[in-house]
Length: 424
Image 1 (cartoon, helix red, strand yellow):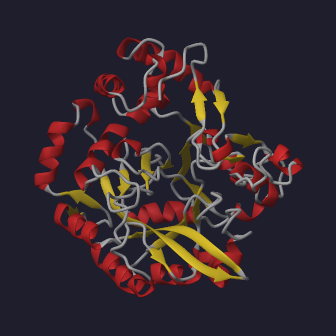
Image 2 (tube, one colour):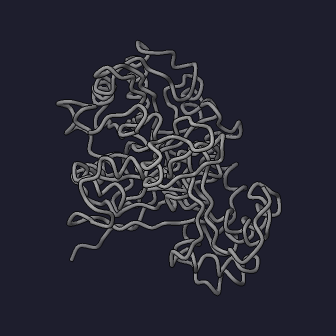
């Protein structure tokens, strides 16, 4: 009997400090540290297209001969002192970047983000050399490229053995493959005859697998999830679950063929900042049905609302809500541990007290994702602030109070609604 490979958590969607609106604290060492604290086995480097970040990666990371990277001995020694003994995993890096394609197709301006993954530094340099013809790679960690998605896919496929492209957060109204404002209605419209080369798409924070599976055109596509982290502490808030060897080739096969793919870990999609329709300036949040009745107009100011992900899914769906194709993989919905602790303490997520409680809890129980998914509730009760165990139990059961996100405003998931709201 074949024994399944151990579970491996992978986060492909990460950024460096060179990307717009990202923390200056992002370094290779900080990514590795937080990958340990979260329980990630493989994490993207992000932004290999940026020349300064790529130079930093080459100085601090070593190729492991399997298409992944590890910290240099000097960087590893510094990391060992920062992580508690309970979080001593040895994460690997995978070379990734996100690019922004802006171009005109079928009479409309398209703005679409894509993640590219490559197996080694030589492939990254080849990719950068080709992409530099279409934009200034040094301007931003997520460069704007004046090239269509098919051309970018061609470049990605040619830059190294097994290199692949994953369309990012495909339903987001702005900057996505199927987005209402600047995307397409199908994969084939975007990539043409190269569509078969795209074997995975990213769900994004505002959608989850059941929403994606309402579109039968995605049945052949593997769903991946990534954090889109703009700071180290956001790593792993969404990730992909694999059971395969820890190598570039095995990860690619798991995503392309399903051999070793085991599902995803997701936000509750209502927490994503584009789940509902709405107009942030007026504080108007709308379900799709209400938005349709209002003809997409804000009742407060008369301007157009931003169509959310749930509405866009309903526009393109050819299955009813809850219908799944045969063989649909499992997934889990989680709330970040610091958010749970903040609600239990009645404090802001970014406060020192929340961070102290977080570090204390994982020091006793292990990495965050293991705590959220597997730790016994009584152990959480003993290790953490009062009510954290209750909140985790409710999260696992899906017992939540929700204020969905809209028009760029994150939603709120409450697990302890009987308590006062956390301070902002």
